[in-house]
Image (cartoon, rainbow, N blue to C red; front, side):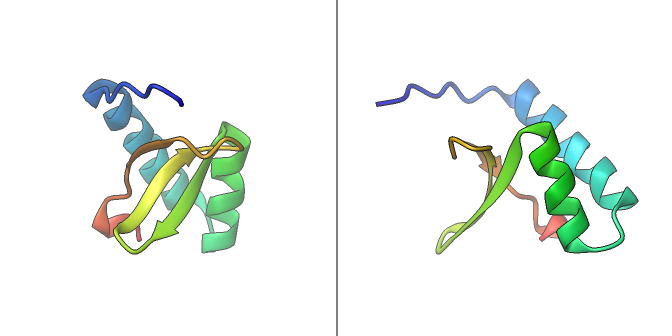
Length: 68
């Protein structure tokens, strides 16, 4: 079992990084590749899309709707 502490400051920083990288990426594939270089990934579930650590897959936060 992995203990995960939800920290709003960390979540805000990650979302800011996602927005910045999304603005620079030409395609969604380029964006997802850039996220992996930072150690993040996306997990598509029935509950929505979540930002996860890569490669371990620990959920950090839900991806904001404007980035989907």
